[in-house]
Image (cartoon, rainbow, N blue to C red; front, side, top):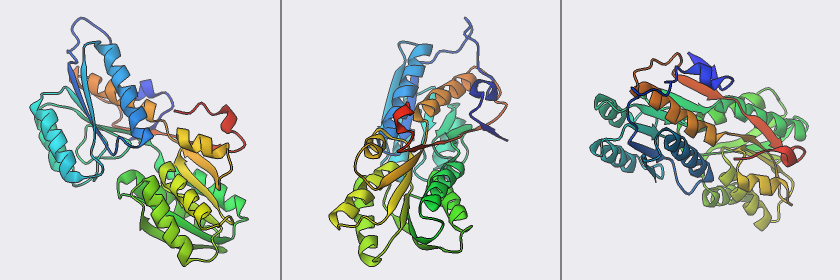
Length: 305
């Protein structure tokens, strides 16, 4: 059963602070890339939440850089270190399953954050399909429901798959919108966005809109357009990152980003793990956080990460 973020506290059976509560001594966090401010915000929030439970808690946050083997080793290290909780942003939602199974067999709750992970005890993530629909509907409206569009893809984790699916669903409603490309992987990075967008802009002489699966990719795509002296398109994305806030307030082609809440993911991930190690049963194992669209019109009132 899914649950939106409305009333998150009601979505899980949280443990009350009692003298009989289990100790929270060590937490392991393995995320997509610590070079992405999204994951930095998530990890920082998780760290603060864990510190509220036990000021002496040890929290180790590492980036897997979307390398499955590296993430396997990180989880192995967490198990060997006898952590109490693992927060996991899976490099591959299915292939990570053996590592997740080994952790849970050792009695360590694994909470997936930002993306699904097969075998995890719970997942806290953005409603990625809804976020992409918001972003791509804005794009479609801005180009008058017609024209050439591109989706710049990313690593095939569940969040990215859902975003592309949601965006395609919007574009498919409009016969006059032509999707030129949707399978180029920019690795979710600024450099990748620059390289992929540069190639696509060179290939296609006119593009009305670009949807990128995250903000770093959007920043890279905007830079590619500037370098090629192309200004006919608008760019939308998903994240609501500090960099995109700056982009929306300056002279860029980026017009909107559907905001995520990485801090909420980190906080709720720790709360759920804490509840599990205290023997509480979850009323829902999936928490979906709805997104809100940040645009040039409302960015001034956006609280950000």
